[in-house]
Length: 140
Image (tube, rainbow, N blue to C red; front, top):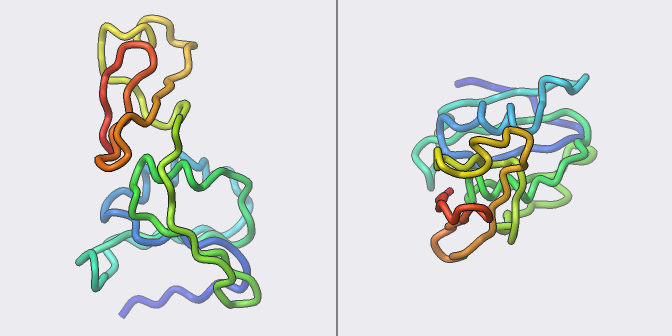
């Protein structure tokens, strides 16, 4: 069995849909951190079958709740002195900017490259966001 040593202090991003950890790694720009980062792909999970995890040594300054747009089942574990001191389940933010991209080729964001990709949550139950410019939908 694969064994990744426990964290003394840091963040564990858990219950990531299998195969999506690199998307989250890239979104958080974890390659720029000067600390240990472990990506665990296709780990066994009782409730999910398989899952991905990311372990980050040390604190990170990013709004992790926005990860709910990419995968609403993610949980965030804050580790201090080798123990989980906080376990957070993500809420879908009402609005997100530059997390997801509008796929409508006629959207102004396709023409004006410097415009931010902004989406508003329009259906919380189904996790549906819509582009504020063209109303194109996105489901997480």
